[in-house]
Image (cartoon, rainbow, N blue to C red; front, top):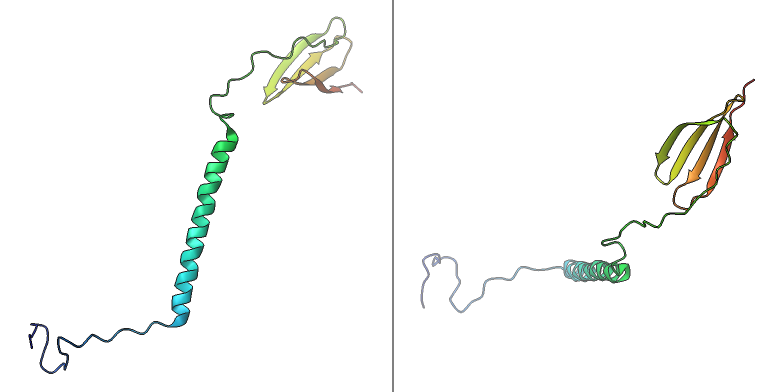
Length: 126
């Protein structure tokens, strides 16, 4: 019999004997199996979602250039003698303040992408 330095004669283990195996409960085994399967499934879902979105975009968002075509000419009726007081651009909406000579001002809101007049607000004096 060959003795290891760590082995003492009092231990009672021979080189032929095995060390005692730790007991693993069945609940622990199944929980490890289930969690491993969930990790694989979730990782597959994440990777397939990334691939799906990359293929679906089809390069629509990459290198997108703004349209230089515009919307053409929009006729905005303004009373005679009126002046443009202020123009404000907020996203795709432009607000134009028209100062009338006859009293009261008017605010016109225009969609700059389509050129459509969204609304008019007439300010009247009391």
